[in-house]
Image (cartoon, rainbow, N blue to C red; front, side, top):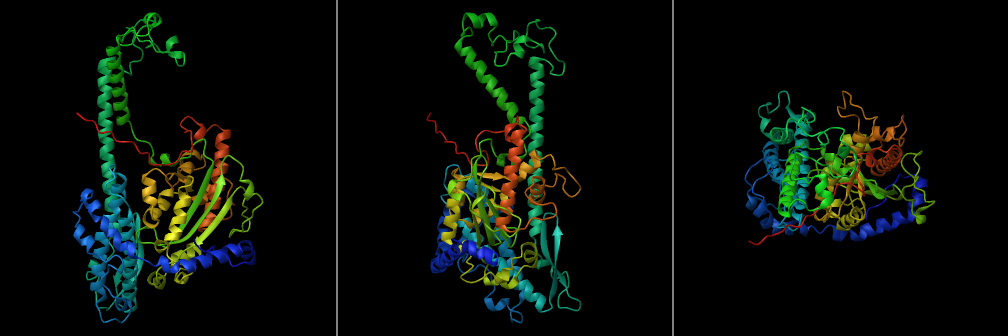
Length: 562
């Protein structure tokens, strides 16, 4: 797979020299095969499967699948030629940028809908997730072209650019240059509309969620009112008209014995004590079945009307979780269909059982001197590259955050993950072998979906289990208290690791894949140990048995013949 790009320190080199040499040789040998991009074109063969189910995009516009079929995903979908990206080119940078942005907005609205469509395709009409990966592949390179066209405009004195936060998204904003050829109005049609699109979609989801909650609440109230009419007011307390030995009394002996059948003399469908003692089938079978069916419907109706739990609870670990693989990605952006994965760090740790005997005594040099391997084993760091266009544009924020300069991440030593099938296969094998853990795991999941061949299919088929330490921090860590900057509590990995003793108070999260993975797994293990001792978390009232985590469960669909 990838080259182990540890620090250039002699200690790190001594630890991994042989492995590094082998990785480099294998990567160079694979470079020719990795550059076979024909799969991107072949992915369009599945357009018919998608067109059958997915008629509209994420913005509720009709999809022209013939337009998608006509895109040259393998060689580029933008309108500019390489020469057009250079300052001083004879072409019109404004017009090229306008067309490229229109293509990207249209394409990304389709990509944004594809994950939900694929996962809800219960009849499996869509066989593979290859087409979304191919569209994302082309979209990343289109984004590189857009960035360089913007850079060209700056170099030519056509506009200046500032990065501005627009609610959920930070976008580049173009400003007219004083005495330049354009006014701010002239630049309106080449502004980045990503924030506007993302925020509109988020508000629509919020409105839909509130509408569903309102309907659920209305249904719940209607059920309560129906119950009051049938059974009497819940708020009125015990029914004083009922016999003294009825279980409707709060202190009834029948109500206090755990597991004992509750006797209710007011309900003739439930047998009384004498009837049960005399004959377990005192109520005619048909009548009993009808009663049981009605009760089941009653419970199901109330369950459907009940408020839904915090959605990230599905990613919490269970009581029996043991071997896990922690993983963390560093990228040059936040959108998986625009950004490249540049750093992957992962390691293994057992939450219950001892570290494997063959791993005992092994050491690993992390970027932080005081980090100790502890119970971690089989640590890896893999480095990937970006396109020459992305390298030329650079990313000052990523350098500041991670220390990784993407302008140096090109060449055979740094292949692109989305062009490295062997690396993808290796990652997929690891991701499906045991649960994988990440902090805010939906980020890693979204990048795997659009970068790792076979991952989406494996996830849909229930072969991927995801555990997230973010909800562990939010729901099980009493130190996570709300504040002005963090309304739900400070649940960043940095804060969580410090509260769990995995990171020094005077230190900070490193923002490198392997280092962040390590403090995350240490924090998780420390946290689970404390929770078990206090009978909380997985061992508390709402805890789950098994390994827990988010996993797709496939229910067989039954076709009934009439």
